[in-house]
Image (cartoon, rainbow, N blue to C red; front, side, top):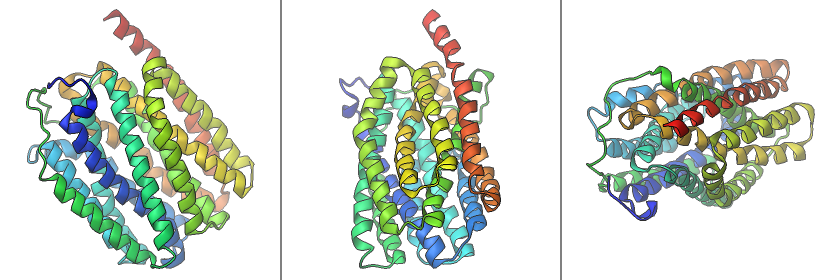
Length: 386
């Protein structure tokens, strides 16, 4: 592995920044526009929203296939191709304002997004070691947040003059161009250990798999229902939703680097315990306090805790075999999305019974996550002995 005084000097860092910006631009643009486009233009209901969000997560569940695609493509090039597919999906989204049309475009967009994220996490862990891993992951999240702010500001301005479908076209086109530019770059370090090109499941990684499964469930409560309640129950406009996204990402941009340093200082178990303890309170407040201003505040605080989740991957990097990183990221990402495929549909149905149920369920998931996080202590003890 090439030796660099700073992770910023590593060519792969610059490459991942480029693709992270493109991916964040595409996904944030899609996410900002989707609920208002789906409800106001396509006319979908809560059950259909749940179905669409579940379908969106199916490609994430299938990310373990990435390891077989890497038999054909170099991983860094496959990451760029995935970003191009993401851009195509975003551009197509504005062309089909119906439930079935959204089903098609959401799959295309999601394939690109999830396959890129798998490669992004894999390359980050392969090319950086030790205390650099939390710093790099935090910095990528911070840069992504800054991109999200820019996209949010762009949408907030142009939504006054352009229809939603036209904004989809513009954002998708920019993402595609950035993806093709990345294909011209070559940041590879040939001294790194060769990654296994087969699917692996190891007992020693059981905690990594468990935390990923629970994190996927927790994420869906936030991504699907925390946004949907603002649009469906409190009737927030696209401008209001965009403002919340911008606030969230400004906070993430400034605080993510500090989260990375805190992980190095206090350890993954402590940081994840703080995250899940906070989420228990947040989800219960969503269910028990029926106020749009409180819901807005909870949405902002909830988003802040997303940065803490990088501790799962930095924890894994400490004890994983170097050649297991790429296949394990595919497996971990797939496991993360098992619950994500099921939960939106189930939650959408439960929403029709009582909108509070998904949030109470989110609090229960956070309790389980807090319990399993304490097992990290055993792994930390093994690393000290080693």
